[in-house]
Image (cartoon, rainbow, N blue to C red; front, side, top):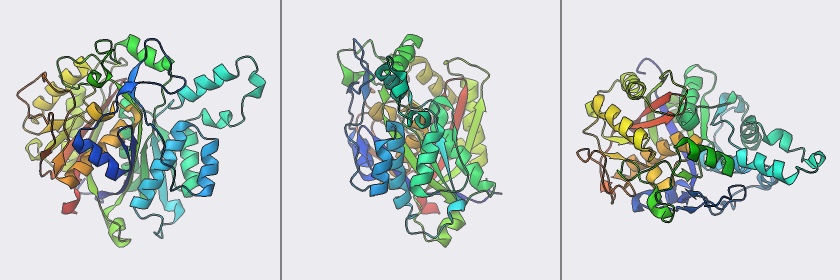
Length: 413
């Protein structure tokens, strides 16, 4: 990484069930706020109901009339991507910057992200398919999110989507970084898209043994418990995150405020189509990221874990962290508060990491009562003060996709 242009984060946008907007989000994180209940959005009906965390309302007050027109025909995933991208755009002062549109790119993390909308369309028009809206011909593509953001923000550089299951958000950041480092763009938005599950996907993931919770069916608030001995699978959460990434000298030249640094990354496969994790693959991703960042494991001050609440997944991640020398670093799990936002998780947890670094505090891990490894320095029921110069964030996906990001505090830029 030292031979390449340093990369910095100059803007963030966020929406989750516990808070929309970066100020509300970090306040909710540090307070240990949650919003777990039974999934009620149309298209997710089931008996018994699935447990998860849904966004109650979308904050649209800041939208311009042309954006509101677009929202009326857009899927929920596209709507949320637009709202969150607008926050990141303004946070990075791109609304006032003189950056040529052809030098701005976008990478959307996520594939098949609009399943609930598709199921509703099939149900609504099963008897009369000729009445399907023409907009469905656009919304069924993952590229609809790319096109919507390009139109709303007049982005004319390189753009595409990338699918990597639960590592999609982190992969979007990696691909955005590579886009900039290659010289194709000066600024790139990395988007962790809302993965809009229907009841069919929920049931499939439940049958796979990945999604909980049968153990806490009558206690939704107790169901999501990463690294706790009573966990029985991940709990879904709605969310979307966007970061603005650019070269440090480009940000300095246009007077942008830096909120964090991307120091390195690791990504690799572990040769496995299945959902089960692989310790060697996770270790490889972490080791590669540290090497790229030019850091030793003992220099990492904090780890934002993948931490899904999957018993096998959490156990494997703990073993990998210890094996690469990170047993000393404070640990927490953002998913314990937001739920598992799937394709958005990598970006949301990057944002959670840099906001915690800025705040000088690390958020609690909800429901971590009886840790699977009590000797590790968990952040448990309350936020703690911490000075974090270097942090590591993990995202692992089905199909043996392992990613790690190394982030640096903005004060060192």
